[in-house]
Amino acid sequence: MKKFLTLLLAAMLIQAGASAQDLTFDASRGIERTLTYDGRAVNFIAYENIFYVANPASDAQRLSVYVPAEYLRGGIVNGYSATTAPIFLPNGVGGYMPGNILEPLENDRMSGGANASLVALSRGLVVVSPAIRGRTTVEGGEYVGKAPALIVDYKAAVRWLRFNRDRLPAGDTEKIISNGTSAGGALSAALGATGNAHEFEPYLADLGAAFERDDIFASSDYCPITNLDNADAAYEWIFCGVNEYYQAVWQRNPNATAEDANHPVPVKKAAVMTAEEIKASETLRDAFPAYVNSLDLLDEHGNPLTLDKRGNGSFKDYIKGKYIESAQSALDSGADLAGVDWVKIKRGRVVDVDLKKYPAAVTRMKAAPAFDKLDLSSGENDEFGTAANEPRHFNKTLFNDTFANADVIRMMNPMNFIGREDVTTAKHFRIRHGAADRDTALAIPAILALKLQNSGVDVDFFSPWGRGHGGDYDLPELFDWIDGICKGGA
Ligand code: DHB
Image (cartoon, rainbow, N blue to C red; front, top):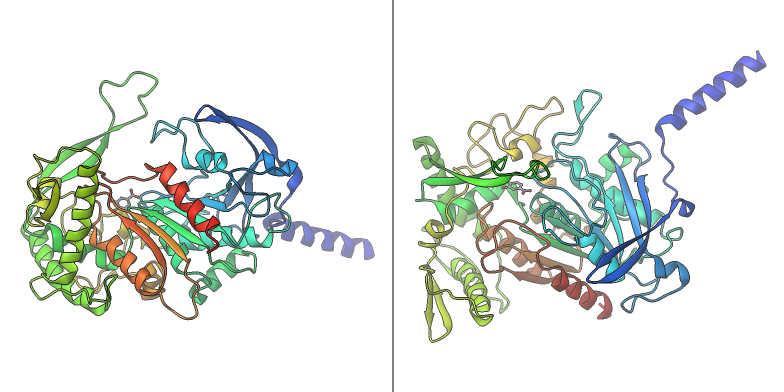
């Protein structure tokens, strides 16, 4: 009998142990590696594929830690030491799909050069990159990565870091800086905006995330596809009246050699919106001013930013100002803008931009509604889908059935958390959205930047000239910004 009980107990322990992952960082698992950046060797220790939650919903919930090797020898890199080195936390999410761990690379497929993780190491940052569940993640026949899973995972990774702060060989867990592009930019913004928000607690508890804080120091967001429940209206505020759209379609390059046959090229396909889509476009355009006015936004001088019923007003002037600033910086660096018909230049100064001509110049990418599709066919409908993979609506201006859970829609939008007293928002944000980006309207990152600024956050927001949808294109400047906020005593 005693033997049977002992066996039973052992079996129970094995079963419990099979699913529960140990969150304790094991510093003996590091492997030293060397890559080259900018003609210099970058030596680092890689600790890879570590579970960041005790009860993973997916085998993907792992992260890797990369530490500049100098720190293990007591060295200094770029003025940082093992105790002061900031922690760069990039995510690889795109299209609300699962995000991979971003290991340091010399030849990143997207940029053709060193990726952000390698540049970060070269500048003395510790890199921690978690894989993140996405809208197609399946486990045991269930879709386990629908909203808000991506934010929950990013937060769990932050909590894991804090749990291990005294076991990590280097890195200051009070200087965590997130980074992402597009849906990953939205994720980075959400992490920065929602620090310790109670809404995420049950999700984190379910996963067995470490019981720690999940606020971060700073958030870097490239072209964030965020504020999804208002992004349709913002898009039509700019694009309404332009009915032809040019969707980027990923297609195999017919001229590809065997080696790069798997690297597709984007082609543009023209189509015209249907009568129903045009009607939705007008409804959404008309809804935008009330949304903007509900936010009580102020410019840097304290003047209200609003729109009248026709969509004109100080908010529009503010957006024009961002394009003027963008065009001026291009002019100042020697670009020729003579052929750009929506930009007005007088004696070397950009004096105006024409937002009526802008959409025809950059072209509309998405039919209306841009995000919450009439036929539920977008990636965002899928992101808000059910565990059985049924897509759902999320824009209450247009839809009231097949609607996602209202709490989840709220949790996915950083705007709902900024300025809340029970939430710790990151102190610093850097937001970039290219002046030629048509995946979402500039108004969306602008509203995010303004709301943060109005809540006392330090925001560096700029629209780089000629840039379409993309990120990590100005890594030296990104890391200069990081040095500035980390070394400035902030
Ligand atoms: C991305 C781009 C989109 O246009 C979109 O609607 C969602 C995500 C992306 O590149 O991540």
